[in-house]
Image 1 (cartoon, one colour):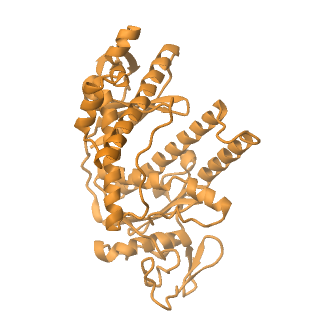
Image 2 (cartoon, one colour):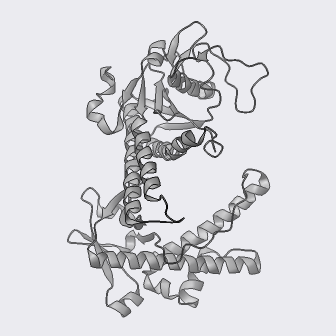
Length: 429
């Protein structure tokens, strides 16, 4: 199991110049690899393998961009190029089989003069006096008399566990991504206990368990951050030519990116910690593939919906589930918000709704769902409970613990004011 930690680099003038040089050379090497692979494909109808690409660019051509980087780093970059063409081939096969709907495009060149990610493998790194040494290529040493640069070692990581470090340029900043070996903690969990998750906008995650509990991860503040970002960008770009970019735009874009990343990690950790504390061994996440592609909720609502990174949050929860030994189940969520859980309405899949199907309940005022017997429950909790019901028979989950109380009064967790959001078990909101 591997983990990843991202650290912002605060370089001085000399280090920044070196980082820019490495990332520029990585970008040029990628374009060289793409050019050779495309030309090889046009001539033969096949793509070169990783070994062929390494040999041709590094040994035969003696590419100067290859020699400007350390050999392991250059090989990692070309391996990424080879894998992109391999993925293109797999997608073409998927189109023929009917499993892929959109026709893929041949990998294209990166923007000339841009910066690209550079990867240093663990075997090429050395630790000296709390600093990690990153080697450079022979050509750099011959030209500038420099053979390496140094970055501080994170205090919370073991150097021996590091498998690779990626130098990531983004919005005129540089990050070091540490990929490290991570041990899996064995936690005793009950697989029959399940947490159903329904995602949305105002309520980012609505979670209902079969042990009679429920909570909501608030999404209003995240919407507010996106609104501020969109207004700021629109104001700065007003009366500017298309493609305009500035230091101010880079700064606010990077700020928003960090806030989004922070929100995703906090929300995922809230869900996982809740499951561990309550010995819940299964999570069911409602998800419709491609739902953002066909969103038609109006210009403003589309913008709010598409910019919320729920897919990244789902993937992060799945990663943490794997680390914690929690079963992660993804299921389509069609009709879960329309059907009534307490009335045991039938839950058809998308495109297979029986003729004459009608919900026993109705969504009344904002955020409430009224059942056939007049009981009012939280609409999102009703959806989350139905998501669990979608897979209950297959996974053999007992839904008797999902009570009217947990569907009516979910507790709310605020992401950026956790000190104001008491422990979920206290019953306070």
